[in-house]
Amino acid sequence: MKLRIVLLAMALALVAPAYGEAAPTDTISADRATLREYPGRLVLANAAAGDVAEVQAYCGDWVRVRLSPRHAMATPVGWVLRGHLTKAGQSGGLAGVPERCGTDADRWRDWVGAINAPFRSLRLVDGGWRRITFGTGVSLAAGCVPSLNYVRDPNGPDRVDPAQAVPGLDLTKVSYRYVTTDGAVALVSAPRPGAGYGVWGFVPSTCLLPKGRAHVYFDEPVVQLRNIAGLDTGVGYSNETIRARGCSAALISPTQPSFGYWVDPQDANRPPCPV
Image 1 (tube, rainbow, N blue to C red):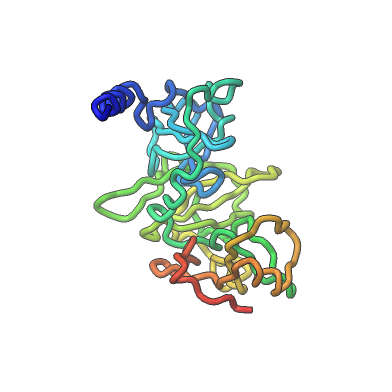
Image 2 (cartoon, one colour):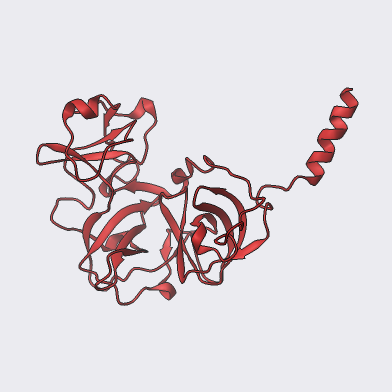
């Protein structure tokens, strides 16, 4: 009986697809597509139309891919929206692709050195605690233009790729999200004139200038909650509400303190709730 079980396991191993081989290759259909470290979360890079994508898994509307890009980017692996893929965006386009929600949940640690506000966070505004769902407004130093991608250099700091600079953005409405692990590159967003949404891009972190505050990150009191479900945006919540949801104070980044907070501290490193 044991021999039969071993033989069956060997047979399944031979026919089962390896991770990353679950589906045929696909292509990016949008003019650009954000590549994220986790479904719906932090942008790591930008894919371009026509980039070949090996589909690996899906989670809701997000698909994990490995790209074969024709341009520089910090990483070819991440999550893109299903609608930004040619085949996967069609009905039945993910047939046979495994669902792997939870994969890469802590991948941010390899890419982010500090962030404008930690995950699941609120800031104190006019006596109430409000959810943070956007970047911090910043100014850019003269001559700084966001690029769709940056590259990692094993022999030096991260470098923004000037060949992928995005012209025509409204640089009076730039918001900051995070800096990379070595602190050399920052992720920002800026809209095209008249647009209601921003284009995610990268600039040297030396380009960031505070705008209407002392720092480039949220410098008013900020807290992180264990449970943020059901809290609406634009609503000021009481001290009692945030204490009941596992409140801790935001932790300034131990590696890049001038650029904000540590994204998601381990339990032992969370400062006590300030209220």
